[in-house]
Length: 64
Image (cartoon, rainbow, N blue to C red; front, side):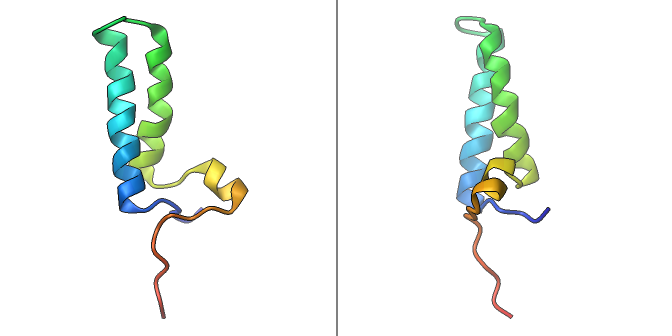
C-alpha cells in the first residue's frame, strides 16, 4: 500500500486521535474514546484503507 494522506491530513488525524483517547482517562471517562486509536494509527502510518477504497489521495503527487 502506498501513502495516501498528506501532512495536514495526518496531523489532524493524530491530534483528533490523541484527544479521543484522552477521553478514556479524563473527562467523561467513556470507553468510546478508544475509537480514537483508528485516526491515531492511520495518521502515524499515513495509509487510510477507506481512502484506498474510495480512490482518495490527499498527499501531493510527486512529478518524475
